[in-house]
Amino acid sequence: MDTPWVISCIECRRSFSPTDVRYRCTCGGTLDVQHDFSAISHKITTEMFDMRLSSKKPIDKSGVWRFKELVLPIDESFIATRFEGNTGLYTHSSLDSYMGLTNVKLKHEGENPTGSFKDRGMTVAISIAKLLGKDKVACASTGNTSASMASYAAYMGMSAYVFVPKGQISYAKLSQSIAFGAKTLQIEGDFDIAMDIVQKVCDLEGIYLVNSINPYRIEGQKSIAYELLQDLSWVVPDWVVVPGGNLGNSAALYKAFSELHALQLITRIPRILVVQAAGANPLFTAFKSQRPLQPLYSPQTLATAIKIGNPVSWKKSLRGVIASGGLVEQVSDQEIMDAKAHVDAAGIGAEPASCATVAGVKKLTEQGIISRDASVCLVLTGHILKDSDSVVLYHKGELSGIQGRYAQRPALVSADVDSIIKQIRN
Ligand SMILES: *Cc1c(COP(=O)(O)O)cnc(C)c1O
Ligand SMILES: [Zn+2]
Image 1 (cartoon, rainbow, N blue to C red):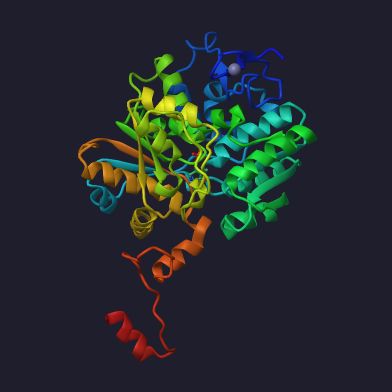
Image 2 (tube, rainbow, N blue to C red):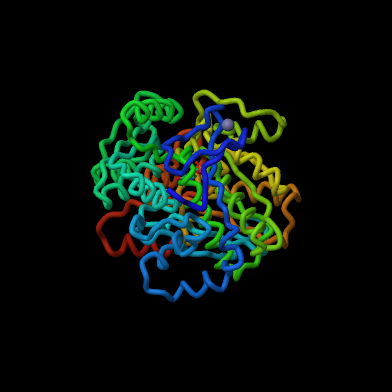
């Protein structure tokens, strides 16, 4: 296949053919898609992407494939799109004041078709699966990757195999995977164990692995950056903030910004802030100690989407954070749930992992590290309905180890107008 990209190792730079089904280099390093933009660099303009906003073509209506030249220039006949992306960019004065800032924007990736940003990477991975003639796909997941994969695979008539840690993913996420018809395997172990097993099973069974170790996932996830810039009329913010789990998303953001910079479509790269849960903080520890990442065994956090101790993309992510002049921060589950209560009360709503960003920014603003007038864009990674259990428990004050500081307790009233009116006036 003659393509304007290769797959190359982030360690030794060895490159492989795009049609090679592999997820690691022979040296063990993770892989990246390396584009050759030389033939088209003079043709790519921001105006061209803006024009596509009014197009009726399905691929232009996708917030991923609208940027096809930057994502992956494959033949349209292979593209499996569910019109992902096109997510809202919110501002809210109460969240500004909660974080102590004046110019915050929140990009709500929970507005994707299956309720998380994972759809942006999945549309590309499933399209590549189709291009490679694969009809079986698999992933290990804390719930959102599996929901997304199950949907895209079903839509394209592929078989899907989901490996999830038993009892550690939310009901909503589990239900998506089951409903979309994926073979759902609940593993006795945590995410890191499931991740290890799925790689072995895929190798042995010739199943296509669509975790973010698959470099094509990262290419799709880059489109958060493109769409964000498009929303901002291509004015680069000071900070872009994401929660960090397996660390594919933060790696994708840096790759997107640095490629745009090389193409001279932007003049500077924003600082990338990754926020981890304190109980699942291996990148934070590596960043602070300036040492290679040490896997953390049995990570603990209520924010299950980022409950990962041995993140696959840590090196790509850390390099991006450092090269952008960014930071890694950690926040407690209490801080996450309090931030979430504010995001929810603003009428926006997001799942716990997403709200780690708000908690992290608040912390850094209080320390004077993010300045009050900085332009800050947070990525809300998942929908509020992804984890309704944690919402109800928090507001009832029953979430173990967490104080319901901003709880809105539901009231119990008898079916009687007078007593209800008394409640309302109270
Ligand atoms: C997957 C996920 C994350 C973590 O993203 P990584 O790319 O694994 O770091 C954060 N929040 C939500 C809602 C997710 O689904
Ligand atoms: Zn290598």
